[in-house]
Amino acid sequence: MKVGIVSDHRGVYLKGVLLEYLEHNGYGVVNYGTDSMESVDFPEYAFKLGNAIKTKKVDVGIAICGTGIGMSIALNKVKGIYCAKISNISEAVLCRSHNNANAIAIGADIDEEQAKSMVDKFLLTPFSNVDKYVRRNKMIEDRENHG
Image (tube, rainbow, N blue to C red; front, side, top):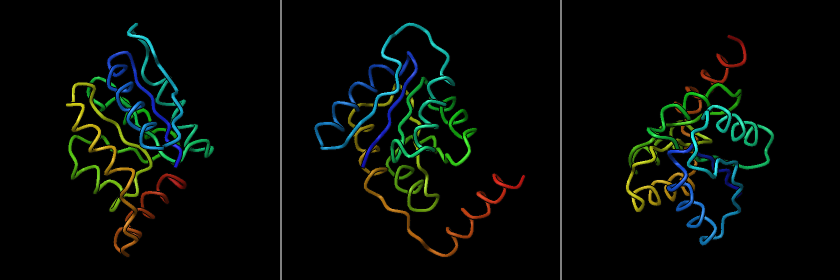
């Protein structure tokens, strides 16, 4: 599995921790920036990641900003991207098993070990394929495609 990762200036440190962790665990990782603590506009980086997922350069994405909220909103503006802003392990599991999310957004101030656990659960949890979740996800996709 190839993972895209991105952050704004607030998320640079945690992104570095997660990047190293993912590589150590055998994942192919593509870093879409930023790599500086200098203030940047997070949508620019979210769109890079969203486009990489959309064009299948990576399979899934991880985005980090101050709260995770801004990255999530921006990623969800890219057609075909379903990003969940997560704060705990349960949400990491459910966003995959119920919602088939292809990206997660995390707040920069979350505990490093918690963030690693959340990323593990997100990457290792498959979509459940239960009829009601398939139906609901199709409803969202139809709205995205047809307004």
